[in-house]
Image 1 (tube, rainbow, N blue to C red):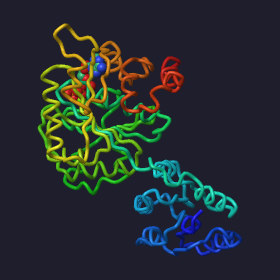
Image 2: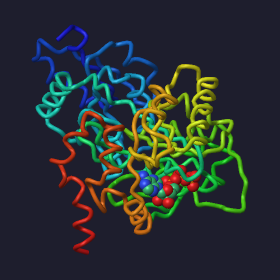
Image 3: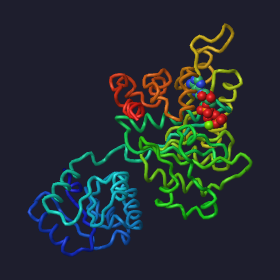
Length: 399
Ligand SMILES: Nc1ncnc2c1ncn2[C@@H]1O[C@H](COP(=O)(O)OP(=O)(O)OP(=O)(O)O)[C@@H](O)[C@H]1O
Ligand SMILES: [Mg+2]
């Protein structure tokens, strides 16, 4: 361990706790304890300045403002130092948030100093600089209407949610404010009430977000607004930014179902995405439109994001004069990342039952094709891990 990684910062205003912790670490030659005698809400960069290997935050996890301060601290640390939270108040909601914030550990007062020391040492040795600690944003943009963008976005969210390497919290954000289908496809009630925050996006905080999320039984969350067929509305960029900021602070994977219309905030989404997938079909007009869209994206976002094209309802052997794989490859070059089989029977029955595709057939061609694109490192393992997905269907059958 380097000097820096031996230093632990303790943030606490509880003098007894500070004293106990000092005593506990005094015995250790390896660890240097730096005390910041402040409430977490009052921190102004002391933690970053200390260049430490781990942080202990003594706080009240039932207070929203302290949770928000913690979130800021964690974000500023950029995964460079693990955080151990010590809290007196403690409930299921707080635990969930702490888990989502990737704190290394959390301990409830009163605690033994042995527990604290053990937890800190584990934090110092642990994975620490996790690469995956930042939310990954996967955006799906349709090239034309009805190409299967929503279907693919939702199944991607489930694959990430159940994945061995990306597994953690996942949220689908349906940005088709007017004609969203994400909630409907999963038989959930859309609860995102945009009118309530439209003019004051800052009102949207963790608590309000929690109320506005629809929760699937698998744990997957969906942020979707009720559809209003008669309204043509636009939403300001501030609102969209606020939503994305908040969602990416609380979830590990964010999957965005984008509308086909190009809005003033589309650029924001493009720039904020880690992965941008364009969903298209194997027809000449669709492929031409894909080319135009790729160009538009480069014009807007320069080279900051590379659009990756998924060809849905992909057929290896199209009709005699139809488009072939070679045509797709020559038109799209290395933007083309894969095709998804045409399987109308499966997709239809999933939509009609309001369940994800894998619940009907975990090894369906559509799913294996998608996994090769989204989670290539895991794609081969899928078959062996079949039981992973059958839990829900078993429960359903039994129920
Ligand atoms: N791989 C596939 N094989 C067969 N049918 C599919 C496939 N993917 C999607 N579909 C079907 O295509 C239709 C459109 O799908 P979906 O709603 O996902 O598309 P979309 O691009 O989101 O549409 P919209 O423009 O309405 O938002 C649905 O009927 C769906 O069942
Ligand atoms: Mg759609």
